[in-house]
Image (tube, rainbow, N blue to C red; front, side):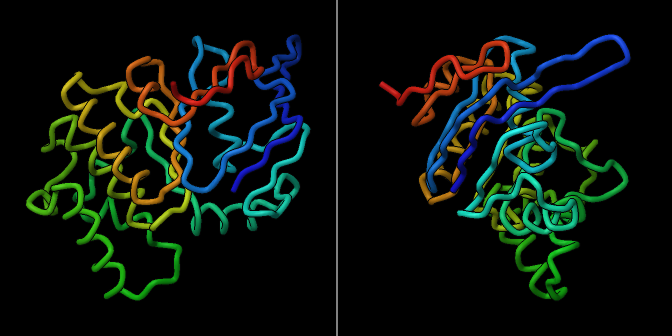
Length: 225
């Protein structure tokens, strides 16, 4: 599904050049479950942004489903993101003024679906995540675990082939965090390709592979024991 070769990402200010990723090579096959780990500032979130086509590499090549996309226009990348990629973030990124079902429906706004199909997908996603009874509630009326499940439902409503999660349990207690990780594992078991950035060794151990970064480079890329 994904092939990265010599991917680097640098950020320049007037006085400083910072290298966030340094000649990263990475292959991710359909159905993989990959945990990206490493110390703070090692490039984990930058790599996830590149994988999700949210951040363009400064150099290198990126193949997605056999197409070299690193030089595509933003319009082309946006269309690919909408059709193939879902995102789950630590901060939930829910809109307080919208209900749970309206937040989930946001993932479908630009897919060209009819209203009936949109409502069906939202209902299915909420039912799958156990939130049907909270559909009309606002995010502030939910617990932290329920908010993250809402964010996950929003990602799933688009039927992504690739799901990227950036510290998805970072704002949750251990019980809710474990519940979210179990949901992610279930999605992977059903065929969704999953990449999770995590600092938690126990969560990383649930993945099929662990990619450990240090100073923007891949230090370890190993299958689970």
